[in-house]
Image (cartoon, rainbow, N blue to C red):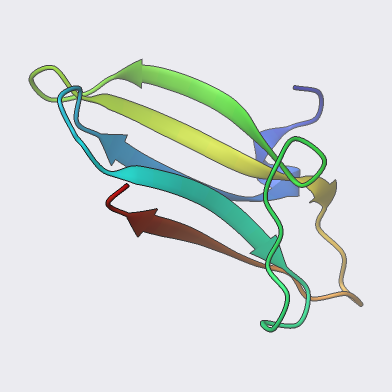
Length: 79
């Protein structure tokens, strides 16, 4: 992904290797409509975590703006 990570809203998660949960990283500009997918968030990095887990950094595709707020969340569910 292009851009400096500090220029984008981001979230870091620790993902267990043997987890049976599903998750989605989502962004919103107004807290009512949440969007995921490559047009809205990208995986900016992944490193080994504790044990067999991995640490993932996800970031928004939109650079920070002083005039347009943006929020990011992790939605987790059991399929």
